[in-house]
Length: 165
Image (cartoon, rainbow, N blue to C red; front, side, top):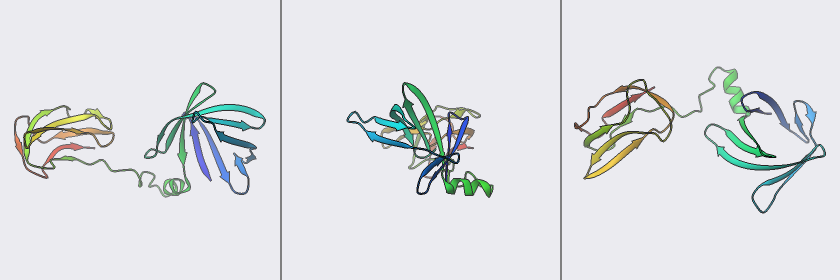
């Protein structure tokens, strides 16, 4: 059984045995991908036009537009439900790692401050190495716990530059 939460509110349980059920009720539906890449869906006699806007496999969310209305659907697979029942819900999530120097270099600029919330892809530090400027970006959402280096200082390979939590 898969659990789906729509826009953070509506929760559905979907079972895919011989027939598909939603919250215990049989659902009669069919879907076809049209040439534009959208989907034409017929469900319980009603017609819907759906478009997949975004798929985030890491967070297991899908953003859909159905008949001009946008929905964010969070998917919880059986393994996620099992881990949650064991109290280790985030066991499969990527761990936040501290930012370390991959090579010796000179810290040109620190772009964050302690306590700052950063998001995946945000630039956090610029390191000059081998006459090139390297912009370090956050690998995931995190909070800056501590900055271990100062601007215009040399660092060695493997040295922790920024501690994240």
